[in-house]
Every structure is written in C-alpha cells, then in structure tokens.
Image 1 (cartoon, rainbow over the protein chains, first blue to last red):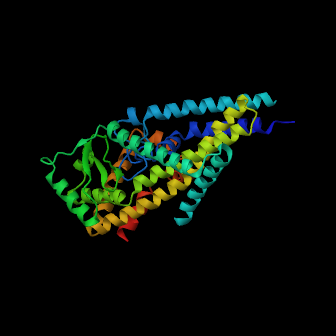
Image 2 (cartoon, rainbow over the protein chains, first blue to last red):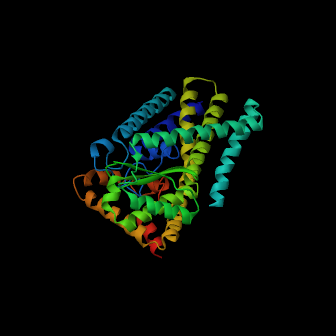
Image 3 (cartoon, each protein chain N blue to C red):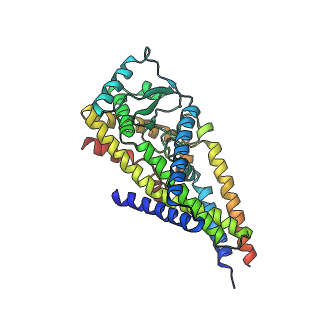
Length: 91
Length: 265
C-alpha cells in the first residue's frame, strides 16, 4: 500500500518546485509583500511584471533582483529533486 | 472586500484555535504573540525598505515646491506631513512606508525628472492616500496572517506524522502552499486598495487626470523598453506574464489600463 504522506510529499514537492522555477517573481512577491513595500521594485504603479528597471543585470526584466530569482529557482530545483526522490522511494 | 477580509480573518481564527488546542496556549498569549510577530515584521520592513534603496531625506532647499505640495495635500487629507525621501532606483518609482502619523514617502530621482509637476503631485497624493488608509499596515497584517497560518499548517503536518524525512519535507511544502493560498486574498485586498488610493488622490488634487497621465507616461516608457533587446525575455515570461492568470492573481496592483480608465471615468 502506498504511503499517502510520501505520495503527497512527492506530488506537492514537484508541483511547488515547478512553480518556483517557472515563476520566481511570483514567489518573491508572495514572500516580500507586507515585509517590504511591494512598490520597491519595478516601475511606479506596477508590479514589476513588465519593463523592469534600467539595470537588467541587477534586477532582471521583471523588476525582481536577478539574484533573488536565481535563489528561488535553486530552491525550486531542490524541491523538484526532493519530490522526485520521494516519488522514487514509492516505486 | 468585506468577504475577502472575513476569509482572511477566518484563516487566522482557525490557526489561533489550532495553536490553542494543540499547545494549550491561552487566547491572550496567542493574540500577544501575533501582534509581536506582525510588529517586528513592520519595523524590520520599514527599516529595510529605506536602507536597501539608499533613501535620503529630500532636501527642502532643493525641492521646496514638492515639500509645499505635500504639506498642502497632507492638510487637505487630514494627516501629518510624512517624511519625504529621495532615492536613485533606476526607474520612475515611489512608495510609502509607515503608518498614519509616522509615514515616509520615497520618490525616485527618475520619477521627478520624467514627470511634470502636476503628475508628481498626483503620485504623491496616491502615496499619501496609502498612508492615510493604513494600506502599508494592512499588507503587513495580511502577510503576518499568511505566515502564522503557514507555520500552523507546517506544525499540523509535523505533529500528525511519523517525524520521518518525508514528513519534514511535506511540512515545508504545505507551509509554502498555505502561505500562497492566504496571500491570494491579501493580494486581492491590495488591488482593491490601489483603486481606493487612486480615487482618494483624485479627490485630493481635484481630478484623476494628472495621475492617469503619470501612469500612462511610465507605461509608455515600459512599452518602448519592451520593444528593445529585452523583448525576447519578456515574451518568455509572458507564459505567466501580466496578462495571464497566475501572475494576475498574485499582483499587488491592478492593470494600469484599468486604473487609468477609472481615474478618467
């Protein structure tokens, strides 16, 4: 019989990991909203979804600092690996 | 909006009841802990925001007109004049931190150089409206509730499992997903508060046209930028981009076109 919690860890881990890898700017926003002013990055009146800043090296095209996005992607990759590992233990 | 706020409170209430039931904490301790948690986030957030953009006080001798306008707007909006700061952000931007009576408005040098005086006034009025309406505090509160609910969800997973490695992993994942779900409601409130701040700003300066023009001007600058070398990257992001579902659900601001439309209606 399949352990439901391990299965949940595998499925949810991979799903969340994919979200981290594909939409790091959304994850950064979820984590920083209310902790830092949401308007701090990007252009006035926007979410940093379009345009971004003048310095693409530092902030990327979505207004979220490139370093933060990379960090979120690394965490996402770790989540996918973790989920895949728990999936593999079920086989 | 009342429904969304009630759902948010319900999330917190469930988390508080779980904490009281599982750990046996009295209600006053749960409430005190929640207030302390949110208070620390608020203080750290304000300090970090000003520090990371390198904000400096906006010198009154160099920008007397801005100080005068903010003073006049603050008076008409019934709040104390906030501290005015300036920073180089690389883009036209402005944001407010703090609360009514202890607010700070930061404007970027680029905003002051690209917008006309009446457009800057519109932007300042919008930020002052955020302070008056306690929107900054609301966001801190929303994030606080989301974090508390996420922590409780993590503990619920841990305490009901066998404490093996899969449980720890599942707890982290469930915590993150829970926080995202609660933040969906916080972002919905945030988008609504933006419209309210726009309306208040329009009322304070006697019309929505200057702020609408400011938003359009900044948006046009973005569109030109998007047509340049970064276009490919932007298009790649558009899978989940501004006009698509997920990013829109997690947006703190409504689309500029809608804001402009409302400001002019």
